[in-house]
Image (cartoon, rainbow, N blue to C red; front, side, top):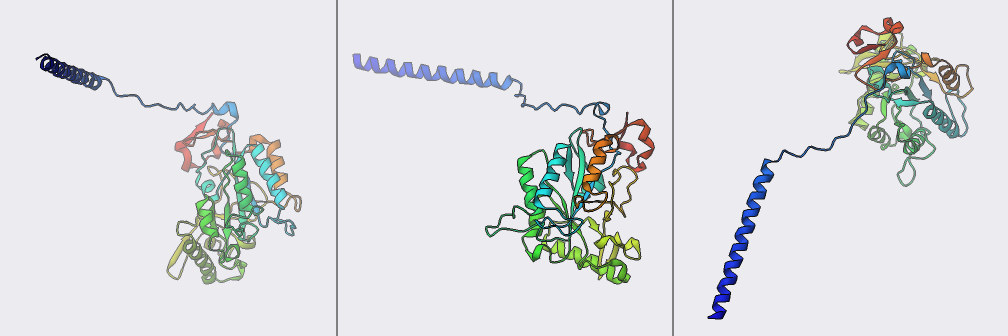
Length: 337
């Protein structure tokens, strides 16, 4: 009997403990259900600074730099050695420039840190000195694309993007090239199919050159949209309008911007820019007057003339004195101070 009593006592005790635990769990669950939901952690983002404090000027000039070959033996006035190109990127970074594509520039899509300046890096002719691949499939380190990728890895605040104006059969005909550019954030622009002097062609052949070029790009890189073009040799067709828009073989084309072989900085996208003729600065370090070094020196000496971002992409900041320079299309974003 003693054993039976102990067994019954243990069973009763276990039942009581189980009941107590169940009751405690019920109370805990009910209490938890009455608590307010947890507040998610948030990251505090500092507001952009007062535009006046940093001298914001989003109606200032923008350097659009034009390169051809990046080669150990430059021969043209648009060429640089790999060392010169690296030095120029170092200078741009040191002086607060941050790259944007031509399409971003002309559309006013300039989301830049406060106090920095946009720069557009453009490459014409789609040569292997601009983009090539090693035997292992990596981008060749001394090409323009390789140097940009290396520079961006070293300076994460310097987005290493450029606009490459390509002809048909670009970069030695390597099928990896155009998809690689798209995947790495670069812009692909039109430079005609065969790089002719457009003034020597009739209207039909001008439009054929444009359409065949756009078709070749979008076939090789289906994700690409060709939004801007650079004039081969800097020469317009006899009908200037055909540089911007036309139609051939049932396929229309229209470009947001046409790039010149100019010699000075471009106007701000919110001001008196002519999309049909955007000037560019030649990059042949000392080979011609008014090259990139000259204009970067000039902008450093005249900082009030340079585009300086306010850090807020929803507004366009400038001094009251420049208010008349703002194009009417952008009035809803005006922030004079």
